[in-house]
Amino acid sequence: MMLHGLYVTPENEAFSTDLYQLTMAAAYWTHRMNEESTFELYFRRLPKNRSFVLATGLEQVLHYIQNLHFTNDQIEWLRSQPQFHNVDLGFFQYLKNFRFSGDIYAVPEGTPVFPLEPMLQVRARLIEAQILETHVLALLNMQSLIATKAARIVHAARGRSVIDFGTRRAHGPQAGLLAARASYVGGCKGTSNVLAGQLANIPIYGTAAHSFTMAFAHEIDAFRAYFKVFPDSTILLIDTYDTVAAAKKVKDVASNVKGVRIDSGDLVDLTRKVRSILDQDGLMHVKIFVSGDLNEYKIYDLLAANAPIDFFGVGTELVTSYDDPALSGVYKLVEATTEGKLHSRIKTSHSKLSYPGKKQIYRFLQGSYYSHDMMCLFDEQAPTGGIPLLECYCKNGKVVEILPGISEIQNRAQFELHRLSHEFHDLIQAVDYPVGLSDKLLEELSRLQKEFRAE
Image (cartoon, rainbow, N blue to C red):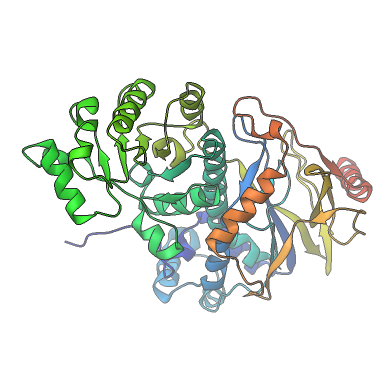
């Protein structure tokens, strides 16, 4: 019996897409519509209680477009599908030779962005740009959402370290891996995900489960056994049976235990009692680590109650962005070639208006904080004092920008977040960041709206 792991790999990810990307591609090819175009990726609304989104996932997008190809097996399978029975064989030959040859502009990872601002801009032949949509949205929507959630949790922790513990509760192993990366960009100190440590160079952290303690006849035996193997990094899980009683045993394990973890119960009461016991036993250096269905709101309340906590392990609520689990990212055509010339395009349906043409975002600094953004047509003169956000990362299908390491991305994110004034970090009350449109962009929008009304 053949077992199917159902993993997305570089060899099959061309099919990690929606069918309509390929049916549109076939129709474009049939009608010889494969001239230059521009698509932009942005979101229409902020997630609940958020005042910004932290753009994350660009490195994976660039990896995807550089490796994107269709295998012979995929092409033969596609030809066998009923929807493609009438498609000319030339289209499948086109897929056989398919490679992305366009340009990618994007805001750097770790940049706060706001509704309708393009995080990513794809300039390419129509079929090439169209085929990217589904996979690119999945990469940027998910990671940007989780990085934003992580930034909120880290802010609530007020300088205490936050560790991603969420892999087991993520929506699958691949989601857990990407969430670990996004969480680190958002400010987490590390992750429990070993593969993220190996592949993305993210610091890894872990303790032991309740099952380890339960495997021994006595709790103290479990503590000593673990310490014997990991004398330099032991954090004892002390809530398997009686948290207070277990805290009293720490001194009998070793004087250089690094910390204790509490995963259940009244965390305010228990951490106070445990801190008192540890201090009385001369173990002032032993840190208190808490976990168990935590989020930014619970962490805020714990610290508001002066709970003596040093580390937070956050899982489910972090890697699923539990309170608002989807980012409304979209990928829209803003320029297309007709009659040999590139023309702006807009979507005019109610509540889903898009802005025409390829755009640049300019960000303005007033004192220590960002004051507002301005969206302009890409080729118009830059406004005085504006910092351009979109940079060219890929030219003619080749990555041209040296990408930063993961720690550099995290540092950038923290620097950028500190340039948003305090009201943008409020956990409950979202505020609107001012984003203006240039006169030329407004004129182009008005012109196109009049054209469509005239039709």
